[in-house]
Amino acid sequence: IDFPLTLLTDLKNKRNFSYGFPRKKFGYIGWLGKKNIGDEFLFQAISRLLYPLPVLQYKLTDQIKSYEKFIRKKIYAGVLLGGGTLINGDVYLSQVQEALEHYKDVFVLGSGVRDPGFWGVEYEEQGIQKEWVDVLKKCKYISVRGPESKRLLEKAEIYNVQVVGDPALFFADKEMNN
Image 1 (tube, rainbow, N blue to C red):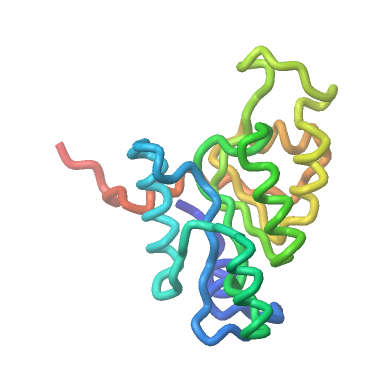
Image 2 (image 1 turned 180 degrees about the vertical axis):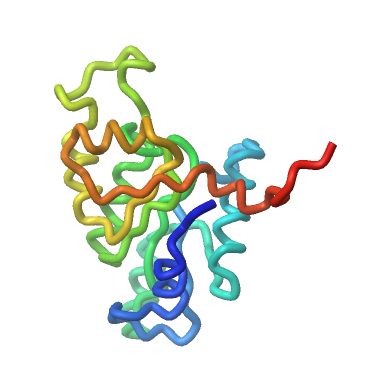
């Protein structure tokens, strides 16, 4: 897995970000709790990459908003859109929009981009829903699983994209053994 060291260092130190919550936490948006071992594995990989900072499943409820207002601080130092093919579908769009609106710092870590041609769905000419284009242009960092995801984003004029592979590869052995 090839996340740039500066990104991991910046996330851990939260350099150039304006939150001062005593114990920094990151909210994680992903396909969790759905009995899909691959997506649970990705959550664990990203959690280990950011260790010792806690990574929690992202939720923004009225109770959390009230608590943040009471303590006058944000609960999450930032929000991570994790692995899985999460971009260019409707399931996670509203959560990412909400996270950008409330927390500002959203990072895409190894997500896949849903190809509308594969699913037989017609979107904009560039292949990416306009709402996703707007959201992704506001993200602090974007990395995707593979070159096809990067190509789809570049076709939508989103160019600051890094291909990092599947974050679950964090657990892989450095050498193949027979």
